[in-house]
Structure formats: structure tokens, C-alpha cells
Length: 277
Image 1: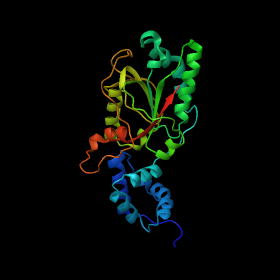
Image 2 (image 1 turned 90 degrees about the vertical axis):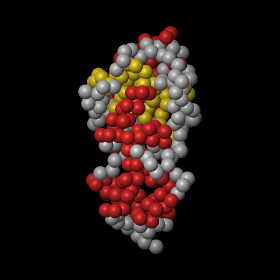
Image 3 (image 1 turned 45 degrees about the horizontal axis):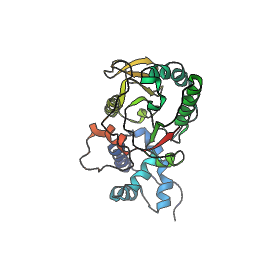
Image 4 (image 1 turned 135 degrees about the vertical axis):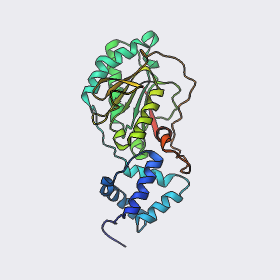
């Protein structure tokens, strides 16, 4: 039996860092050595390994993907709380929701689609649900159906928030991806922004964290206010979409994965839960 924290060598950290980046797009700089060491030590001890190298080999040898999910679950940060970014909530209720609803035929809230990416244990998604319910009451509009899609890379966080599982078959009017892209490098951020743009209706809105930025020269989005962007291409309109967005917990194969495809991997591998209002 051993006690205390296991040390992690430079090679061990680089191996884990490269694996996490390749599979999930999370960019662990050398400044994250202490974080990785601290978060993985307990897991390594519980599994009976005596070194980070042993644990890394177990993760890469596991073809089921279970060990990889356990790794990213420990590495990811799931900090969240209700009504985070209050200016976003104010913009949502005062401007974005009314504008978006005006672009939906019949002002039918059942056709509204919102994606909450990186939802952690669900407080942000539940905040959006509260805002929607209060908005519907103020506008005297019926509210029902599957409206909010909430996703996260951490399965333990989702277990605290999970409701139901369904794929979405329409684009989104709003995507909330706040304090997620800070973990990615520029290439992955740009690719993810492109993916979000493709998944939004023209005129749809992207909410990000206040420590993040797309840059005001983005070709896909126009700046509206700090941490809030609008997809270029006119007002939001409703239409059928033949592309089926596949979101599941299956982990893609490691071999041959290209860095430019990281955003696709992130979108496809994050588990999700769905609100039924």
C-alpha cells in the first residue's frame, strides 16, 4: 500500500495531454500539470495502479471507452450555478427571445430550439427553462415540447441533471456555450465556431463566456455585445432540416483522427439530456 500523491513525469503528462486533446479537443498546457496530477491521483489509487504510465496504458488499451470517459470526467471542470452571467439573462428576456419568436411563424414557442453546450450539472439549462416559462407566461403563450438540448462531456455531471435522451432534428435558434472554449486552442475554437454556425438558423444567437471571444472579424457571426454573437444571414426563420444531429456517448476511434475534426468529435461524443417543458 502506498500513501501520498504519485508524481507525474513530463512524458506522462505529455501522453495524457495529447490523448485528451486528440479525443476531446481540451488543450492542457504545461501550467495544468498540478491540476492533472491532483485530479487523477485518487482515481489511479482507487484502480490500484502505481504510476501514471500504468493508468495511461489502461486507458489506451480499453476498447470500450469507459476508461477514457473516466479520465475526461476527472479532467473537465464542472463549475456552474443558477443565473450565471446575469447580463445574458437580461438580454435573453429583453431582446433575444422576443426577436427570435417574431421570426417563427405564428410565434409558436414549440418550434423554438436552444442548445446549452457544456451544461455541467444543469443549472444553466434549468435557468433557461425558468426564463422560458416566465416569458411564456408574460406573453400568454402555450409552452410544451422538447425545446432545450443540454450537453456536456462529463457523464457524472449529466447524471446529476439527466432527464430524457432524444436527438434533435432541427437547427437551433440559440446556443449557449459559456466558459467551454477556454479549454481549446485557436484551431479547435475556430472549427467549433464553424460547427455552431452550421447548427444555427440565420440570425440565431451564440452566447459564450465573458473571458472568451470569437473576434469581431468573424465571418460567421456579428458582434452584438460582450460574449453575445448573432449568426450572419438575416432574421431567424423556421424551416425543416434534413440533417439529423447525432449526439451520443460513443467515443470515436483514436487512429487517424485529424486535429481539424476536433469540433466534430466534441459535438458527437458529448452526452446530452433534454428538457420536456
